[in-house]
Image (cartoon, rainbow, N blue to C red; front, side, top):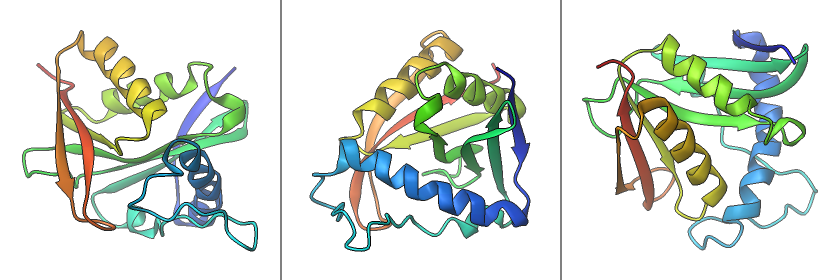
Length: 171
């Protein structure tokens, strides 16, 4: 399998926004009963996703992921961490179900960590156990267990706790 990670031009924003519907569906599996958000299955049968257009503003880096030229997901990196000491934040990260569990997400994450050296932060909602397990595994391997974990309250889209993993890609 050939994995490509390409910067997503503004023309690809609708494609990523469409894939985000599947991202929301995937999140509903682990967060569907998280009482802070409404994960009800939409009456029209189409999950909505947060507006991701902010990732095409300055200091944001949207990427589209392909496997053998087939759409396989997206990664949205920005410089908006929970503190001013964070260089990079993984805003959103999604691998299409067909390609999950095959090491593709791990390879993409490591490629992005290497592309953007500095202090990273990755957040997950507490009920999103698959994401928590994925990120802890990837970051632990990448940093040889040199990362920190804490829980903080974030304000958007409404106040809630998030698990934050912080690490450096340069020593």
